[in-house]
Image (cartoon, rainbow, N blue to C red):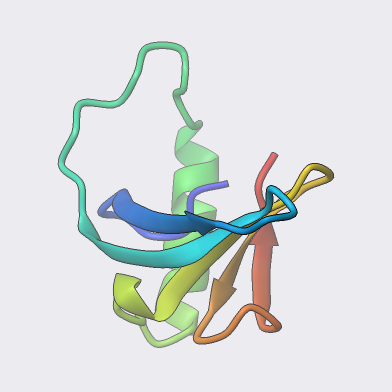
Length: 85
Protein backbone atom coordinates (compact mmCIF):
# COMPACT_ATOMS: atom_id res chain seq x y z
CA UNK A 1 0.00 0.00 0.00
CA UNK A 2 1.27 3.46 -0.86
CA UNK A 3 -0.36 6.36 0.92
CA UNK A 4 1.52 9.50 -0.12
CA UNK A 5 2.85 10.55 -3.52
CA UNK A 6 6.37 11.45 -2.32
CA UNK A 7 7.30 7.96 -1.04
CA UNK A 8 8.38 9.11 2.44
CA UNK A 9 11.08 7.63 4.65
CA UNK A 10 10.09 6.24 8.08
CA UNK A 11 12.16 6.17 11.27
CA UNK A 12 11.12 3.16 13.38
CA UNK A 13 11.86 1.99 16.90
CA UNK A 14 11.74 -1.72 17.70
CA UNK A 15 10.19 -2.75 21.01
CA UNK A 16 11.08 -5.72 23.20
CA UNK A 17 8.23 -7.68 21.59
CA UNK A 18 9.82 -7.24 18.15
CA UNK A 19 7.15 -4.83 16.89
CA UNK A 20 8.38 -1.69 15.13
CA UNK A 21 6.63 1.65 15.10
CA UNK A 22 7.44 5.18 14.04
CA UNK A 23 6.62 8.19 11.94
CA UNK A 24 7.41 9.18 8.41
CA UNK A 25 9.91 12.03 8.41
CA UNK A 26 10.04 13.31 4.83
CA UNK A 27 10.40 12.46 1.18
CA UNK A 28 12.97 9.77 0.45
CA UNK A 29 13.65 10.43 -3.24
CA UNK A 30 15.26 7.00 -3.58
CA UNK A 31 15.00 5.14 -6.85
CA UNK A 32 12.25 2.51 -6.40
CA UNK A 33 13.46 -1.08 -6.25
CA UNK A 34 12.81 -3.18 -9.29
CA UNK A 35 9.77 -5.40 -9.04
CA UNK A 36 7.93 -3.14 -6.59
CA UNK A 37 5.85 -1.33 -9.14
CA UNK A 38 2.35 -0.15 -8.31
CA UNK A 39 -0.35 -0.01 -10.98
CA UNK A 40 -1.43 3.39 -12.27
CA UNK A 41 -4.97 2.67 -11.06
CA UNK A 42 -3.70 2.03 -7.53
CA UNK A 43 -1.61 5.21 -7.62
CA UNK A 44 -4.64 7.25 -8.74
CA UNK A 45 -6.85 5.71 -6.03
CA UNK A 46 -4.31 6.50 -3.30
CA UNK A 47 -3.77 10.03 -4.60
CA UNK A 48 -7.54 10.62 -4.59
CA UNK A 49 -7.88 9.27 -1.02
CA UNK A 50 -4.98 11.50 0.10
CA UNK A 51 -6.64 14.54 -1.51
CA UNK A 52 -10.00 13.74 0.13
CA UNK A 53 -8.19 13.56 3.50
CA UNK A 54 -6.99 17.13 2.94
CA UNK A 55 -3.48 16.19 1.72
CA UNK A 56 -2.00 15.72 5.20
CA UNK A 57 1.77 16.20 5.52
CA UNK A 58 3.70 12.94 5.47
CA UNK A 59 4.96 13.65 9.00
CA UNK A 60 1.42 13.14 10.30
CA UNK A 61 1.58 9.50 9.17
CA UNK A 62 3.22 6.60 10.94
CA UNK A 63 3.59 2.87 10.50
CA UNK A 64 3.38 -0.11 12.83
CA UNK A 65 4.91 -3.48 11.95
CA UNK A 66 4.17 -6.63 13.96
CA UNK A 67 4.73 -10.31 13.26
CA UNK A 68 1.16 -10.59 12.01
CA UNK A 69 0.66 -7.45 9.95
CA UNK A 70 1.75 -3.94 8.99
CA UNK A 71 -0.39 -0.81 8.86
CA UNK A 72 -0.20 2.92 8.26
CA UNK A 73 -1.87 5.37 10.62
CA UNK A 74 -2.63 9.10 10.71
CA UNK A 75 -1.67 11.22 13.75
CA UNK A 76 -1.72 8.29 16.21
CA UNK A 77 -1.42 4.48 15.96
CA UNK A 78 -5.13 3.91 16.66
CA UNK A 79 -6.22 5.83 13.55
CA UNK A 80 -5.46 3.21 10.91
CA UNK A 81 -5.65 4.35 7.28
CA UNK A 82 -4.53 1.21 5.52
CA UNK A 83 -2.99 -2.19 5.82
CA UNK A 84 0.25 -2.91 3.97
CA UNK A 85 0.26 -6.06 1.87
